[in-house]
Length: 282
Ligand code: NAP
Image (tube, rainbow, N blue to C red; front, side, top):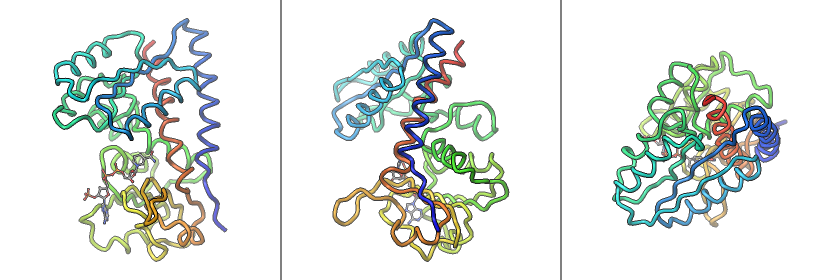
């Protein structure tokens, strides 16, 4: 019998804990905790993400500073803003919402965020520290997945973990976190040969591909833990994941749904990283 890992419930529980920690930080230090959110342009999905992040800040007691710049804002103006936030003592975390408009050099702009304030965990310093298993700010989505394993008492030591997808923001840091947790990790991508055979070896299977219902029941081992990071649309335009949930679930010991699985954990981990950045700034 499979168990569904309820990301919504875990996220709510964690946010309540973060709220208490934020309050205790404020009481002890006499300082507030601040997250700066920079949005350039009017991409509708980005606007929704930014709104949700600001709402989450309010929920846990983190002060948000929102900067909305016109879509034609030149490179030097965005750089100026990020540099000023980098040296602003009230700002513990800086988040530049991606994607940036095409005329902007995203890499250059992101490189101006000091690693101590890189609450997305995307910069080279944080990724490098993660590889070396040192203190760092970990990318929110894969870190959220690790919390899901912990909450269910899923032991990763010595397990075969297969991650499908090698993006810098999900797949690669996920593989690194699993490696640091003593799993034996295979990182797959679009050029991987015999993907099905590799997935069938997985005690832990993480799908971060971006293709609706790509992982089918014949790719999953009996008793596997299946984590679905995907946020896709099915043939009817309905939100679904990278895993064919209805057919895969019976083979699993644990599985995450979409929606209500990994998704709610991501912003929660952003709040956690901002709190952590504040604690480390003292
Ligand atoms: P991405 O940058 O597009 O990366 C997709 C990865 O999947 C790439 O490494 C690609 O391989 C691999 N891939 C594509 N087709 C494949 C195939 N046929 N077989 C094996 N591998 C294949 O995507 P992402 O940003 O990591 O996001 C992945 C999914 O997670 C998306 O649905 C996204 O919306 C979702 N997501 C959810 C959250 C959340 O909070 N829940 C957060 C972030 C992302 P190559 O490298 O060879 O091209």
